[in-house]
Length: 124
Image (cartoon, rainbow, N blue to C red; front, side, top):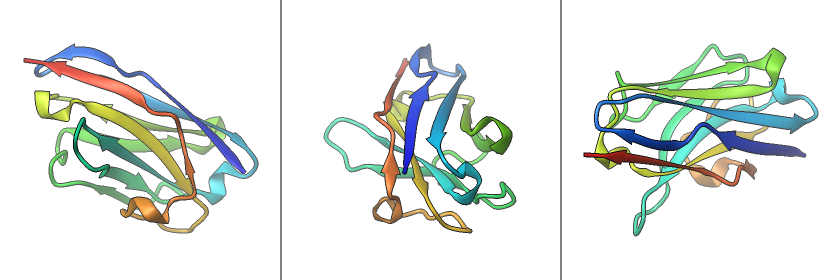
């Protein structure tokens, strides 16, 4: 069992930056690959980024490549999403997710544990 708590969301202007954090409690965080997803009002949840349990393999959605970076610190049981050059279309609730697997997944249905989400709002 893994409990996930996101933080770091907020209101930022177009072009600004935010760093999201996801703190995991429970056992064996290093056995879980992690992902970030987001959901805007009236839209389906979409993949943003994912990282393997070792941190050696990463994936980012095309819409955020070059602007967002996922990372993790297994010693701190945490995963992060550094978001730069934010755009109004990045406005959404951002969710952290975990799956007990060697490699990351990009489909939300493959993840077993989810956080409650953190709101990111980018004003134009």
